[in-house]
Length: 442
Image (cartoon, rainbow, N blue to C red; front, side):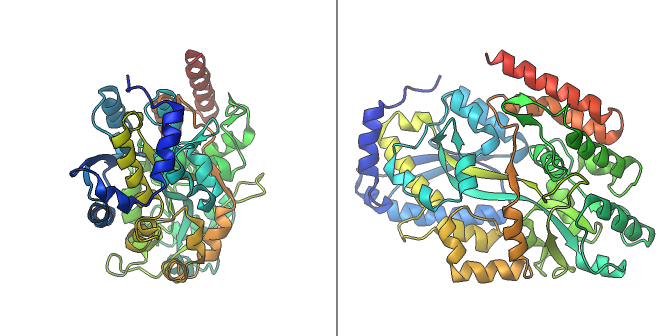
C-alpha cells in the first residue's frame, strides 16, 4: 500500500510555501533527486526532455532520475512499480488510467497545492477535465491532442479529387477510385494493433458516427445503432471494400505513420502531432502533401467528432507523504507542466517546436511564434485543427476499471476486424464485461 498522505491541513500549508518559484529550491541542503517515470518516446521527445531536465536541474539544484518503459507495456509496468512501492515522485499518466490510479491511492489530488493550481485558469477546459477524477484535479498537462483525419493531397489530385472527403461514404468512394487506379493498394491507414492506441482509434470511429459506449456510467454500446454502424463500417472496409489492409490488426501507430509517409495510404487516422513529422522533407519525399481535414462522419451524425486525450504529470501519493519529496516533485511539475523559472511554458514550447506535440496552455494560442509554427507545419490547416478541437470528445469509457476492460475488449475489436465476430455480438460482450467489472468494484 502507498504511504499515508499528508494531512489535509499539512498539504495546505505546504501549498502556500510552494507558491515560490522553482528556483528557490536551490537553497535546500545538498542535492536531492526527483524520481520521474515516463513511457519510452522517440528520440525527438527524449532530446526535448533531456534539454528541459538539464535546464531544471541547473535552476533548481535538484537531480532528476528518469526511468521509462515501453508505451505498449507502460500501464502494466507502472502498476508493478506502484504495487512494489518503488521510487516514483512524478509519473506520466494517461487520462484513461487516472481513475484507476486515483482510487487505488497511488496519485494525489493537487487542488490544495497553490503552486500547481495557479496554472489551471490558463489550461484548456478539456485538458482540465481529462486530468480530473470525481471533481479533483490530479496533475498538470504533458500534452493534449486528438485523432485527426490526414490525407495525401498529391494522391487525391492524381485520382481526380480536388477536396478531401467529408463523410465515411465519400472516403469509401474516393478510396475505391484510388485503389482501382493503382495509386495505393490500401488507401486508408488505420492502426489496429492491440496497444493503448486501439481504444482511441475505435472511439474515434464510434464518435464520428454519433455513437457512444457509455452513458451515465452504464454501458449503452450494444443498444446504440450508431455504435454498431461504426464497427460494421470498419469491418466492411477491411473485409469487403478492401480499402484497409487486413494486416492493419497488427499495425501500430508508428507503422501506419511510416506507410502513410511513404505514400502507401492516401488517408490515415493519426494524432495531429504527426503532421510535423510528415511534412518534414528530411524524413519523407512527399512532405508538403500531407494535410488535415475534419474527421469524416457517419450518415446519422451531425458533427465531425473525434476522440481526444490528455497526458499528464501526476503527483504520486508517496511523494505527497513526505514534505521534502513533495516540495521537489511540485517544483518539477511546475517546470514541466507549467511555467518554469524563465516564466515561460518552456516545456510545452520545446515539445511543439521540437516534436510538433500540441499543448494545453491557452496563453500559447496568442504566442506569435506558436501561431507561425503551427501554420507552417500544418500547411495552413491551423483553422481546421481549431475547428476539430471544438468537436473533440474524451473517451466515455474512462473509469477505475478501464484498464481491465480494455485488456478484455481489445481482442473483441480485432476479432470484428478479422471477421470472426459480428459487431453486434462484440458490443454485447463488451457491455457485459463493463457491467461485470463495475459490479466487482461494488
